[in-house]
Length: 52
Image (cartoon, rainbow, N blue to C red):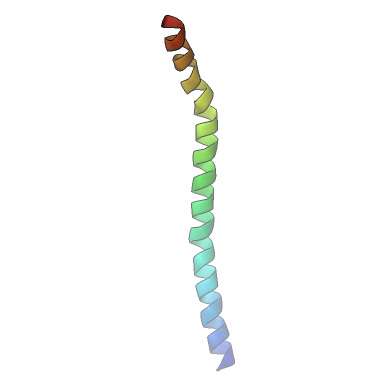
């Protein structure tokens, strides 16, 4: 009976690790994307401020 409980708990933990890692990867990708696009977004702001 203990092995059944351990298998159940192991399945739950293993099932949660996948989505958590996927979310962590998505958040990391978003942060990297923002970091890469932020300088590009700042350049038009500088141009508009120069036009003022």
